[in-house]
Length: 456
Figure (cartoon, rainbow, N blue to C red):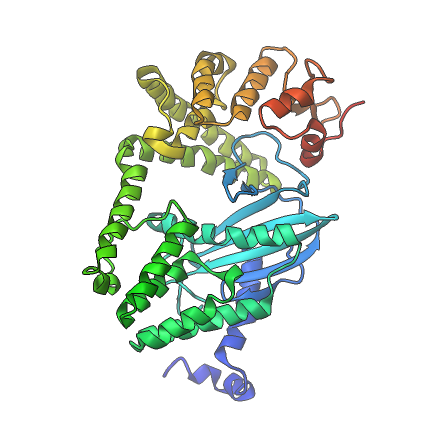
């Protein structure tokens, strides 16, 4: 009761305003502060999604999303980052606010010089954000990063629809979907499983807005309601939607207990085990986790340095970050080269996508070290573990370090006027042909994205 007394007058003056309406504008303003660029006309589409559109945003991406939904990390080195976004690309930025226990994910596309964007907010429930908090667990805790990543992956199809159509999500249809899901959740909490199933079915009429986690929740309420056919149908849709999805322990969720006696459960549990085995059992988990840790070490300090230079931090701060970067690079390279020297190339079959860390760390090494390990990376390309563009960039960098023209045009350097310019090419007439062979975009597009004027 003590907390009510200082607020008696404001409550009387705003007695017709609900707590949700009071919290909403504060929450939007808080989101704006997490993002280092302006989002014009930011408006809520649903509880976890916001939309905006406005002038072109030049802030470089953390990731790019391809047409097939794959996410590729782009901030991997000290190279200059793109100044302009190509219209065919989807750019994604992630911002972590550990104090507020919030992750803000901004997906954006460029059309006719203007940005359209979707903002996905993962907010942990708290006293401050009681209405806008969605998750009971800390979304910014490193131990929960896999769960947070899967939630954000669920939103990729919505972003790609925006890119294909050029239309931001329909707030009315999204609201209908969310309202039905909320009612389903409320029924579940009251143990009205038949009612929950009815509302999930109502939500899923909005086909474009279905989320994988809701399909799984629908399977749970269907099982509890005694509709086993519907339960297995939802599980099948969940598996089809994401071929990589699996439950680490299929018996752990007791909402599905009513399905265990059904003959179809054994097939489902076997599929879960097969997916888990396929993804995890063959991995050298100790090495995979070590590589992921090295990759975070490599990128975290570069991210800090990039932000410091963007914000024109004092020289001593930038110098200190560069010193720390060199120390980390030395330690990371020593370990990475030890692994490559003793085990050779360790690929996706043993460490998954973590094998990319070998290239990431080596790309920051000396030309002598890069040349030494270049044959291993060429082997990795042949195995399909890393893209050909990785080796192309390394070859260009070696040539630049050793004073020779580059082949693929991936390297920029500082010109006499202090501006970034293209390092000399082997053959300007063939460069686009060579770039195409390794999956690179045309040189003019690359330079335009980097904000570099092509020399005549």
